[in-house]
Length: 260
Length: 250
Image 1 (spheres, chains in turn brown, red):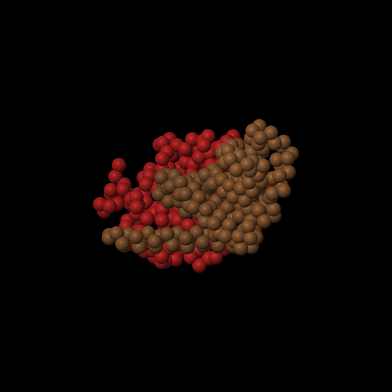
Image 2 (image 1 turned 90 degrees about the vertical axis):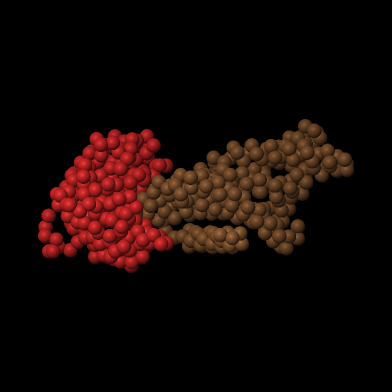
């Protein structure tokens, strides 16, 4: 096969995958409100994805806040602008760094977990067994997981942002003798609805993307146990890329609607 | 066994065809399964046995031919009708396919929670689960996880799960593969006792000649995606055809 043919094949495969993923996404919207609602399974997934990610998101957020403040401080001091620190950190974390970093962490923890779990269920015929028993595996496995990530990610992001700001406040308190009350007053004075609303809206899309890609890769996993690893790995890679695309679109739209 | 000509089959496959690209896996396979019968399908690896059984329950779409289960052509059924029909078919997977995030009890409850009311099953879920586990001698294992069970126990739990909705047809995909000879005999014994107790019709895919000898009323030999030979174990084991002989010689 010549080089050009190979490139054409790859482009074709890429667009086929986009088409399949769109169909998968469409099927989710078709089945999300169809009965039975599988509420118990949804709650179980919310617990697994939300509660069990708290520690990781919390620790990462805390270190992010500490490091961000420590590294920004000298530069701001150079310009005599250290009093802007709470506003700058608050806006950066709420608008951009908090959502993106938390989403990337969740893509690694939740997305790869979904890909591996569903992939393993596919290759061991558990999904086939569900189908044969007259249960809709898409509804039970996929719809519940995508809904859970969509609902849980905004909560995790808010939690991660809060911990990051707390980490930043500790540095400011220790290094700049800024009281916690003053720090948080300045943060909340600086943050506007035009910062919170786009960040919250995009966090739902981040959650949806993590669930969608993880489920898609796992549900259509092939090639035995090697395929499970591939599903898990590619779920993280594709999701990470998709998160940046969503982020770009979100910032672009926020710029139009909120004039940030 | 009643005369085949007088009663309609509970399951009938006619001229089933399935291709994967240029690989023609099934080339016009046909069979009839009658009430209370144990029909064994034998064939080499890659002869299309597993593809056939997957087409039978709608896990794969056939490219041609018809599959009728209890007078319903499954190739024309919608998803809802197919799900209802599937409740009348038990399926034992080759690797057991137990849901590994659920306990044995939850594995058995899973089909019940959706279909118990539709099938007018009046017994309590707990009673049905215990009854199914007692049938396979594992009443003590309700709260264990599949990973805590041996291969033979997993196969028995899978059999209990296949039976939980009291199906009239049971499909076995390599029921003894991967098991030691003693456990294989136990599974074959269970299959026979279940067939007697529930009067089920069974379609069994196997390589295991001993299994076929003990359990079959009739055997179909599948070669290159078509019916190559058919008969009782006695008839086929005495055949002079080299392909048939290759299977039955010990």
